[in-house]
Amino acid sequence: MQAVILAAGQGTRMRPLTETVPKPMLPVADRPLVAHTADAAVAAGADRLVFVVGYRADRVREHFGDTYQGVPVTYARQREQLGTAHAAAAAREQLTDDFVVLNGDDLYDPQALATLFETCPAVGAYEVADPRPYGVFSLSDRVVTDVVEKPDEPPSTRVNVGAYHFPAQAADWLTEVERSERGEYEITDVLERVVTTHEVTAVPVERWLGVGRPWELLAANEWKLAELDPRVDGDVHEDADLRGSVVVEAGATIDAGVVIEGPAYVGADAEVGPNAYVRGATLLGEDTHVGNGVEVKNSVVMAGTHVPHLSYVGDSLLGESVNLGAGTQVANLRHDGADVKIQVKGERVSTGRRKFGVVAGPEVRTAVNTSLNAGVVLSAGATTTPGEAVTRDR
Image 1 (tube, rainbow, N blue to C red):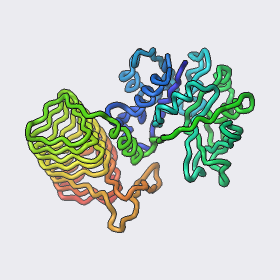
Image 2: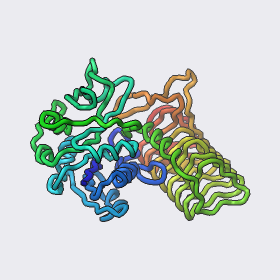
Image 3: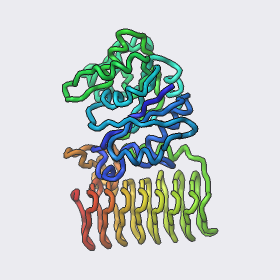
Image 4: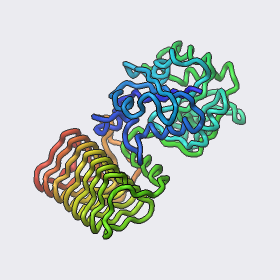
């Protein structure tokens, strides 16, 4: 059983976090986002993983190597990002039998993937209250009869989540797709062809999350951090207090006076404290530093980032190698209680969250006593001045 995992995209909606990291390699709990999908595929019975790579492909290759979880790994290069069928077609020469295609930036419940692997042909189908923004399946019992993109009048509440088990002949069909109206080669066109020649089963997906925008990375960590078993392999001071599900990796140091309320993950060689407070679903990546008097709540702090002194970071995403000056304060709640909005690809979009802080790209530097308003996005390398209140993106 071959599993093709699509991991080539640039992740433009996730910028600036993806300036240095491809979206599938963004951290979710104790591993990259795409590794959760790869692990579920191996558990479901995949005996070979084919990663379709493109943007910053070396990060994917370095993590998975030639063998992952005892399963051989190969790679296919998508040189231009021209759609999902175009991506899967990059792996065409490696496909010799029926095959599964999975989005590398989505999270699926593992049991659903296990059922998908056992059923051919099949698609993952997730139930939503409002299916209009999605590709929606027309169903006869559990058999797919059609897929309709973003319909005004949806034929069902089951939507396409980018999980497919195709018969072997569909490998050729990947290369025969014509461009859609938006100029891409869509894998749903292949699915429609399979529907006309086979009985395609809609496999219910009980839990799914597409991770395309910054607040969805927070949601992904809230999900996966809650599933971690507590473990302490690092050095924890006797006067520190770890509560609930907390993972402390080898080489990490938790100093005196630190309180960590799980679920939380502290990566290898991270330093926390003294007298720091970490709570909510928080990920502190490898070689991070959270210093004296700092509070971090429900946030993702990526590798090499420092929050050294007397700062507050809530409901935020800090990219790699960020440094917050002493006294940096992040606002994460609007006075009117409305959902926080942020800028995504030039459009102001609601996060759907009452509490959301900032998104800081790699190597952002704030000066002492900086205040960052809720919903501010700081581009890679952005800086602030001492005492500045930042209310707009920079």
